[in-house]
Amino acid sequence: MTTTLINDTLSVQRAPIHPRSFSQAYWDATREKRLLLQRCTRTGQYQFFPRPVSIASGTRDWQWEEVKGHGELFSHTLTHRGTGALRGHEPYLVALVRLDVGVDVVSNLVVTDPTQVKIGLRVKPYWLPLEDGTHLLLFQPDSAA
Image 1 (cartoon, rainbow, N blue to C red):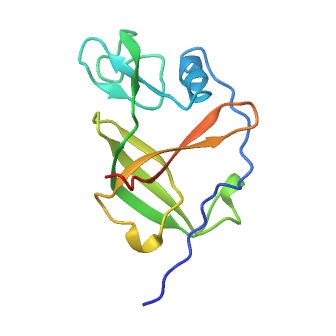
Image 2 (image 1 turned 90 degrees about the vertical axis):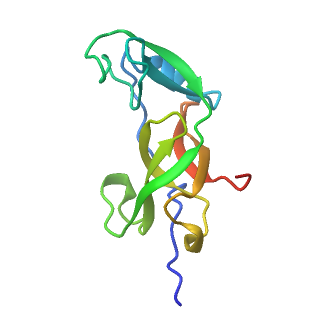
């Protein structure tokens, strides 16, 4: 069996983040490698990525809550034709992670053995440092799981 080498995309030069007023708290928390999610106060539903209104109720009735960021691989694809900054860093894994709090996050899966990638794989955050001191949320296998 041939194993496909997967690039981690960790060396990709990322564009600077320009937070909006409704996402500033999220990005500030990443400086300390903390994951804040918006949670609708009417429905209790979490949402990711930050938005000005709750996707559950359509209102501005949401609050920030810190979560661990652990979850499981719900779906993934091995990307062979990257776009933008990721072009030339193929193949890499794009992952749909369902966090333990029930919200889905699309990101990259890094620092992994490609033979171990399977639906249901337990994952945890991997915080990629950015030039401005914030961190980008990626995921890696959770070896403690």
